[in-house]
Every structure is written in structure tokens, then in C-alpha cells.
Length: 91
Image (cartoon, rainbow, N blue to C red; front, side):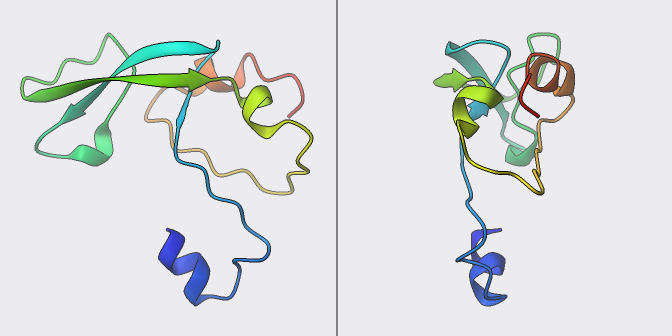
């Protein structure tokens, strides 16, 4: 995504953030399936037989965004929408 933003000349208008968003600030276990790393999740309910587990810092959407104005917000949370958006009061 970052390469595409740069190639399209949007780098001065787009901020990318790599991180974990949840309903509260703290730490959580990120489960990353070896077969498809893009399906990594914080959800305990999802079981991946071959998942690598990694402890990661998590924050809320409100804490991450702070006072930044957002016209468009792209969130890829793999089924974790309720936990991310339900506790976001500013957006």
C-alpha cells in the first residue's frame, strides 16, 4: 500500500499506520497463519493450526487518530470491526 501511495503522488495527503487496534489500550496476541500472513488476527475465536503468535501493543482508534482530521479511513481488521468501531466515539 505504501508503495502505491508514493507512486500515485499521494504521500503528502495520506498517513499510513501499521498497528493493532482494539477496544482498549494494552497488549494482545496476534495470530499469524503461515499459509496466509495477511489473515493475521487478534480474535481468540479464530484458530489457525499453523499460526505464529506474537505479543503486540494495541490501542484504540480514538487514541491512534487523536486530533488528525479524517476524510477517509481505511481499516482492514479481518472481522474485528465491532471491537474497533464500537468504541470509537470521534468517528
